[in-house]
Length: 200
Image (cartoon, rainbow, N blue to C red; front, side, top):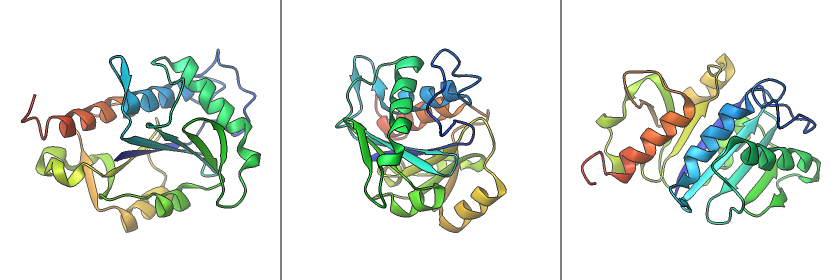
């Protein structure tokens, strides 16, 4: 299973934001929704072998599991509605037990460090960063079950960088040009889907 961890620094914990102002009052939730959608949506389908963890303000983690997801559409507004619904139920999460506001969505009261510690993965923990080693230097089979960690429109904080330095197995970049997180996700999928651009 491929997994992605997105760090959302500005998305509000309070779910009273408007779906009509995703780029402003919702803390660039528009960009985060594009990343979630890029992780799952294909033409007329959804990737069932993908899991996404969204860490909101180092306080709440929303986990999306592709094999169980319902009502994820390829538009920012409907994805934002799922995020908002998850935040509305965050107080129902107790200890290690999540709230489950919608099929395939779980809400945990845990921050970035706890999320990295609890992600169940068979592959490496990979930080996607423009200063990393080219992804083409890494065999795609090694990355197939990896956990890819990305920041939002902000750089990782110094605390997050220190945390990742102690935990990541690889630090990779997806190309010579700095891309948005959703674009980087698409490149990762394409690299792995084509076995390192070898199979089409």
